[in-house]
Image 1 (tube, rainbow, N blue to C red):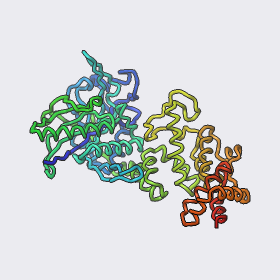
Image 2 (cartoon, one colour; image 1 turned 90 degrees about the vertical axis):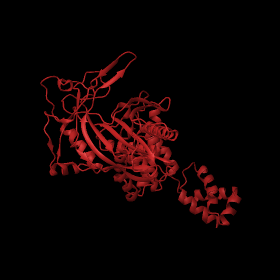
Image 3 (cartoon, helix red, strand yellow; image 1 turned 45 degrees about the horizontal axis):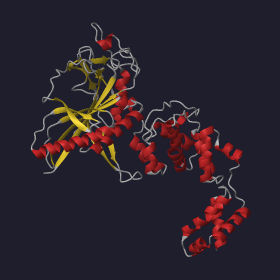
Image 4 (cartoon, rainbow, N blue to C red; image 1 turned 120 degrees about the vertical axis):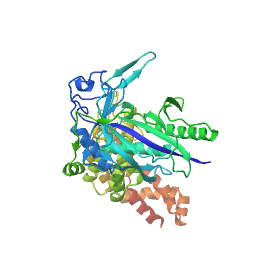
Length: 506
């Protein structure tokens, strides 16, 4: 019998706000334990919660970006349970009237190679609701410590339908969600700092069946890659159990990243009785259509829409847009450069994606500050693979100078090869490209008589290439152009060299 997996995700995302969800105290990662608390966070007698308007607005913004319906009335409920990380013994959350309903997350499954666009589809959402985060427990051999700094931080819970079937889809879903939310400035979504956390519900069933199998929950995935690997392992484990006739038990499991296996944490009953009821201290919130339209007017372009626009409007290749369009900093830098020189967006994109990113990644790995070049810890966040957070605007190369270099190359003043030398100097010194070209005497040689003598020497030295070109092999002429560029120290105008070479051979 063949089986298929059915997967749904619950993703928690901390929202960037100045204060906590129901208290005026702020939250910052890495502060000394229990220093970011107040009587509201502690739930001391007589205190009352106050709604964070900014957290509500930002959650609605995410809902609109993901195509959710925003109900007119929303309310907050008490989710009652005892656990040491919750000082109230209940969590202020939303139950039957959340902020956002329905919607979906567009995902891309990787193509055959990096230059190909993969398959796109939309994973359906059930809801997005807004709640408060809990504290952080640290466990030791004989005891546990709790830090309430995080308690009360605004937290979006994004709940998908059981609409995924593989680890690759889970990986694509988490990356798409992370890109969309961070692009809008709602959250940094740094999973290592707990700003984005993921629980995965997995079941398997016979292929073709409509009934869901036994649901097993995987808790607190800390990266899209770990989630993918965990899901693939758990699917294999569950299918193996069914084939052996071993019963599957509804339970919560954890992923051991060192052993690369899932392990039982606790078994679960069919449902927890959280005794939800409307919070008596918080009134329901009415969201007017006027307010909703004011939020809609602030929506940024979602990454996949921007990627499609860059490909159609600027003619950029998929390989470039797949790097650029999921990073707001790169997009802003690119658009400023294109505004300065709109004639060749492809050349500008190439300089940013390949040359500038490569230098910034190398500088960060070497521990250098991209602005001063000084050694030391480089605090740019993000992965070297993606280039995210590399500090393009902190580098010595401005978008306008990138545009200037592209324009100079297009104008034939220097070759693309010399352009790479000029860019390296721009990155190191911050000087404009025109100044570097002038100082170093790098302008292309367009003296036809001198170029003709170089071409004659190349023709005399490679009769085989001349004969091949005459026989119809157009590419054979490249073997003749190389010696000319070498003789001119890379300064020969390639277009002129090609024209002269063809004329001389004929």
